[in-house]
Length: 333
Image (cartoon, rainbow, N blue to C red; front, side, top):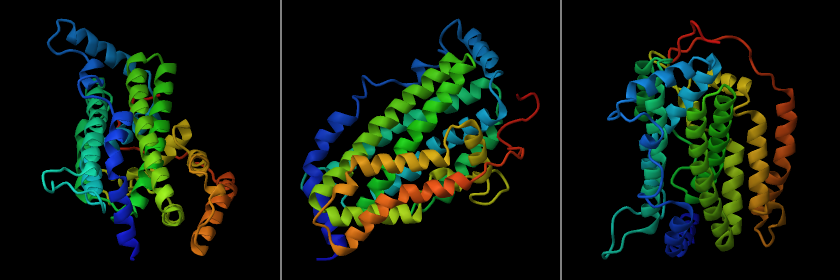
């Protein structure tokens, strides 16, 4: 049997469990938070006073902070690309068959619906803050969606679930630390928004982590090979494909990454720590009864954190200033 057919059989075998995953890791729409829970109510007489407070508090946040928050927002806003990518994964069928809708497609739509609120609330906050160039941000967002991106997973569900497990935890870390920095500057509202977004991302991380673990029970060799392949390619975050108006694909990423690393929002060390957590969560070192190729992949994954640590220890973050079109430099701290 081909690898493709094995993966499809595993996805079909797990599919009856998806409803339980949704109950465990997603929240009912009527109960979950919405962006307007955190933003000024435009129907209220105090609307303009609340907007003025947002604008005043925003003045305390520095240039690197705004660049990082903008890039985080743009990657959240590129949600249509993520949904279309996941809907094309083998085993995810959005067309009903004999009156029965595929559980995986239900998951993708429900996950997308939760994620959609993140870009929505952050975008509105940026607009009200008065500290960024919204038109340039909108251009970058449109480019990111129009350009599309290749995250190296193809239609393979194993690789896609490794990617989403990693990416959701990375996003959790980034939002959580941005929230911490906002709180340190006395911006309680933004801190609260970032922290609740981070909470969503952690729930989603645990869901995809469990998907991988469940696949391990059915096809450990195939899953370990997929994990190793993704780590050899490196996990490419959507932000890798950012560009500003007039720029080329990916041109803005390095400068944004420098900002994020200078702030300590997301660093090379975080990448290594996430890998260690996944190796531990999936008990990679203890896997047995693998194919010869999968055993080599397991050994590679176990040794990889130390290898990456040696590289990371030699890295230096650029301190050179760079002017993004998203954020005005004048008057920034």
